[in-house]
Length: 297
Image (cartoon, rainbow, N blue to C red):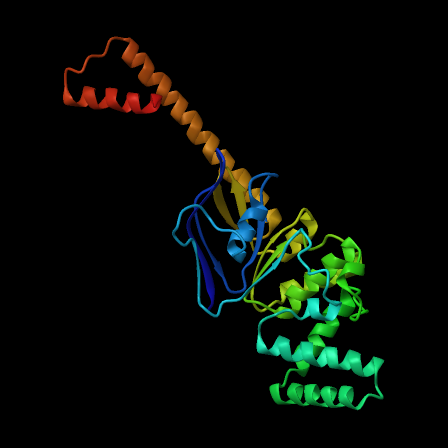
């Protein structure tokens, strides 16, 4: 079973601490919703896991097997403007994706220049490579993804796309690449209802792991099986979907409030004892005074 481990991750920006010794595991088949108020570093954490950014210090904080592949959907457009849509879609590094890309490009060329002998020869070679590598299922899956996300013109240049179209192409690209871990930052942006419904089903049955940030609480509730709440530089982990998280967090806060009330009551009791003129006449009394000093630190 493939896993990714984050260990003792620390990240600061100026005097602000985003992450303070974060440690967690992402298991195969995990569907993790990363939540937290704005400014807690959700997108920054995704970028660090993806290898785009790194934590403080010289040591490594993210660990995975050498063949562990990560796909990252950013909120920002990261597509090269000079690429065609077909090149942008099939940028994956796996041999399967490269084979599909060559086939789709040769198919486009054949459709536009079917009478050219060189183009026909190139298409036949690409088709033979598809047969040899047995990548027709990958190609079929890719076409389903494109159709569901409303992407049809593969010859179009990225520079000609709207912001919403670029986001859908970026989403299709990471889904087609089928990495071990999908990192999705607001994946439902620019998607219509039908596309969101399809994406929900696709992510539920995805063979790898998923960590996503989304403001769509209904989508989050239906897809995830774990919640990571990022708060004050720490992560609180919860099992279950978003609704289960809300109940578990309320219980955690109730327990913490009870513990804090007990601490305050103990503090008042010890303060009264100190004010009564307690003197360190014995080892036990001295220990009690020392404990009171710990309260005030």
